[in-house]
Length: 72
Image 1 (cartoon, rainbow, N blue to C red):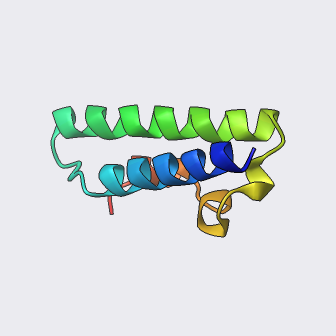
Image 2 (image 1 turned 120 degrees about the horizontal axis):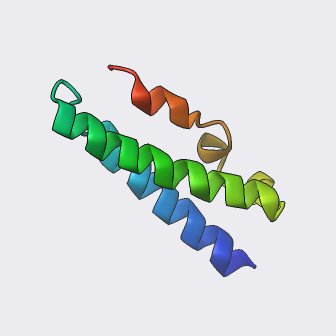
Image 3 (image 1 turned 180 degrees about the horizontal axis):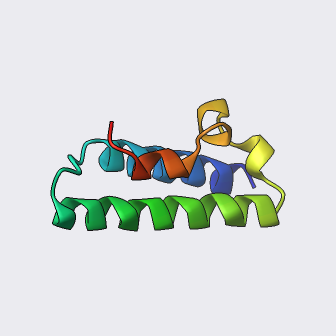
C-alpha cells in the first residue's frame, strides 16, 4: 500500500506543478490546463473512493483542482 501512496504523491505533485506552469491566456493553453485538471481530479476522486486520500501528503489532501481553472 505504501508504494501506491508514494506513487500517487509523486504523480499528483508532478501533474499539479506542470499544470501551474501553463499560462492560460490562450485558448489552447486553457485546454491543456483543463486536461491536467481532469486528470488530477480523477486521481483525487479515486483516492477518495479507495479511502486512501488521508494517506497522501497534506498539500495534496488540501489541493482544490478547481483553482487550476482560474487565472493566476
